[in-house]
Image (tube, rainbow, N blue to C red; front, side):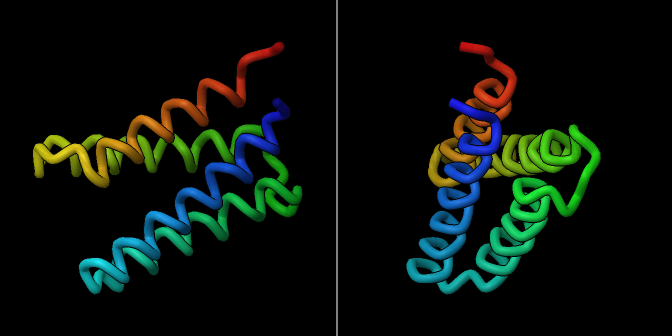
Length: 97
């Protein structure tokens, strides 16, 4: 799987998670944050943001964010799941098949 494909799958899951947070808990912050980070990742995926590791930096920021939230809440959903997905996205972007 190409790194860009992994990024697109992650973007869809990120936006879906923000949308679920908004619909279930009424969290506007969740929706805004997910769409904002997804927009930055989209710019990386289409090549507008050109440094090769910009997407990895954004994913690393999200990794820290989800890890901090997980340690604070001690609940796997949704932060634990997004932490696992972020780790998977970072790993899959750098694996060569």
